[in-house]
Length: 248
Ligand SMILES: NC(=O)c1ccc[n+]([C@@H]2O[C@H](COP(=O)([O-])OP(=O)(O)OC[C@H]3O[C@@H](n4cnc5c(N)ncnc54)[C@H](OP(=O)(O)O)[C@@H]3O)[C@@H](O)[C@H]2O)c1
Image 1 (cartoon, protein in one colour):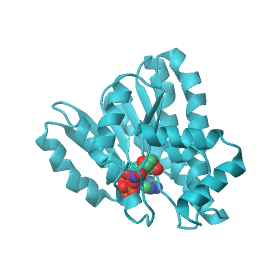
Image 2: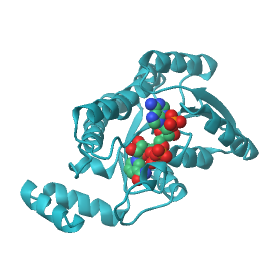
Image 3: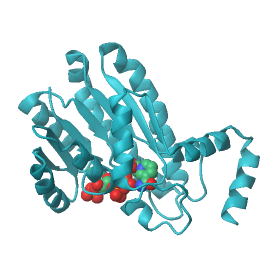
Image 4: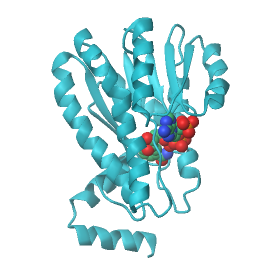
């Protein structure tokens, strides 16, 4: 049992996590559809003494992800850390049927496709860590982002259930809920993004949380408090505050 698996390593948070975990002797299994981007990243990781193994794969493709897991396990057992990070935001007006399908197939089913093939082996080994990248957007439906918020809420509930199932076997499970991070995903956002962090800083905070074995890793604190409060308010009061904040 060795190595780290990161999905969505071709940009943003996944790219920054790969760089952060690139240490002498570390094997990094990196997954994304854009293999050209993974090939650009690989030499940067080799420079730091790591051994990147690149996997061109679509997390929505369950059969491909199962095959990939078998390949990895045949070469050295299940990874010691799996970061199910690949995710998409969806269309601008993201409350419709099509966006919901697209976003759920990546953000929710893609995470299951990443983690579940390894779960029996991890439980048998009696160790290992699973990290699911959710979002603070999972606390409440936000304007024009119904599919994205719903997908992250679904991940939150699913991660709780998997943690309950896996941790008695010695497998740690963490949900990571970042606030805004500067990546390709947020680059096109036309609205203000309070307390936005760089991807390397977000990756650093994630690693600290994972090293501490936190069940839930959330940042930055002011935004965490804001979304948690918003989620506790009566729904229409929350709507009013959101309208005030967005000027719509
Ligand atoms: N940026 C933020 O403010 C923010 C905040 C909270 C949570 N998050 C979460 O952080 C995670 C990473 O997002 P990011 O901000 O780093 O965005 P990003 O720069 O757009 O990166 C998304 C990554 O996911 C991969 N991906 C998307 N669909 C995929 C698929 N079907 N199969 C395989 N890989 C796929 C992309 O690779 P390919 O396109 O090459 O496949 C890319 O590497 C997401 O789960 C996102 O929801 C982001």
